[in-house]
Length: 92
Image (cartoon, rainbow, N blue to C red; front, side, top):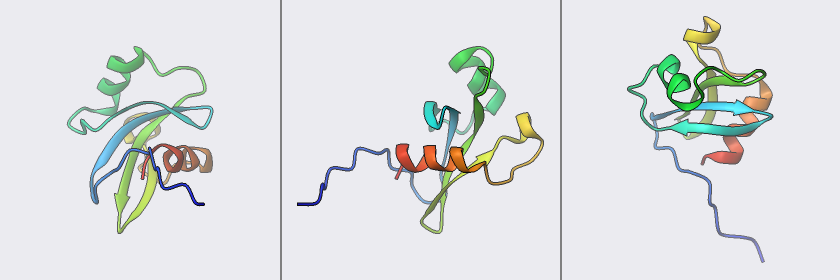
């Protein structure tokens, strides 16, 4: 029988979560998209941990995606594949 319990966190259409990913796992997140990525990192971890990535998880046209932080990467392109996988594991 298929499992019907989906404990992933829902993201509403057009909304964003600020996220930190390390080792393809979302380690920190907030729906407070009024924060800058820099302030989010400062409040969450002080500084971005070695090997971690910071950006946003969003849902547009029903599709979840991870987007680079402009503050940290100077672009808002889709995040690398590992970050995309982390978002799909944590959010719905």
